[in-house]
Image 1: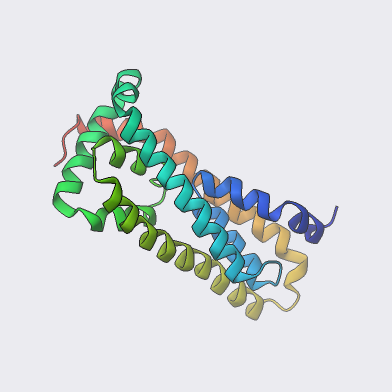
Image 2 (image 1 turned 180 degrees about the vertical axis):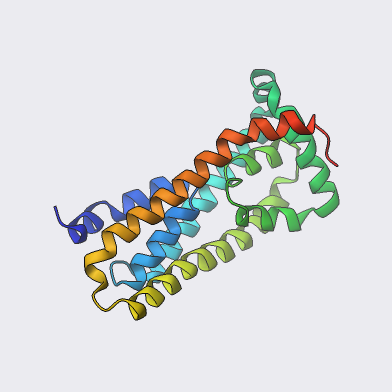
Length: 194
């Protein structure tokens, strides 16, 4: 199966699946592929916005409705919830707007925000704006990267699959590293928020 047919057949399902988890890498790759003509840039931004907003709201409500049972089941979350609460009281909407730009925080932070009993209406209103900006900026970075690489390499088509695989490998390695070291940071910080 050719690279083009793989993208055509599995591109949007892979984008949706990636966005439900840590979507930065997948959206960067989709932006790169939009720059190469495989996707429509407005379509991937709209899809990223819808999927990410739905996922963020779902994670928020999971924390809001079931936060106490999550803490009982996973007591190691307590220091992170405390730190998140301190940040909300200090920075409020700025933190909600900015957390998605820090790699590896997109899934856990909305759960923690919900667990802190933050206002659902306020979270939704800030989240809509934040997701829109995140989707445009992240996909746009991939688009610019794709166009820049195309300007440097004459026949980029023969290298596209390797570039996509490389981007995916780097993004996956960063996500895995981040997830494996979350507990280490909690243990070394001892739950302090300073």
